[in-house]
Length: 176
Image (cartoon, rainbow, N blue to C red; front, side):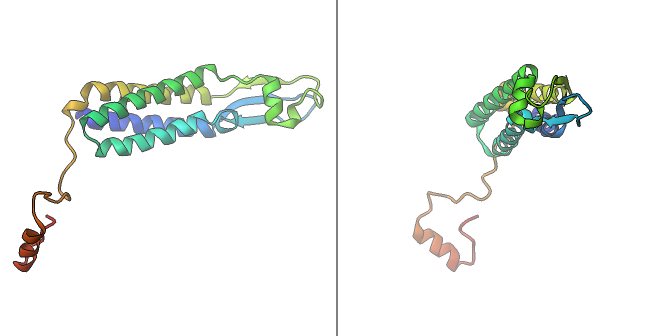
């Protein structure tokens, strides 16, 4: 399999998982006393998974258009984004006091005790971060072997304006 396609597929998989982690339940908080359980998505707890997914998707599009040196820079950026997503997935565990700032109904003034439990989203974000990190590292190592961007729509800069007019008079398209 072509390593460029492998990197593309891996980044896309990571983007999907990070985007999914933004909408899955990251944390559930039970205020007790018969009150409704509050579920917070990854986007409520941290905007990082959605931001990393969006930045990785943009980097993937630009990666298809860039030359070798820029590809390496973008792959390093992808590796950094993946590492950041892994770090967020591992370290982001909001406490009851932090949740009270997000949702007033979880404040200790209103409740006696808030029981916090983790949802599945951090694991999904961790998997997405690992995929983006791995794609970045593979891209850095193999960017020099990828196909070059095509020059199909670039004009010949050596042609003078007179040559271009002569080509038009001859019925040819000087931009090809």
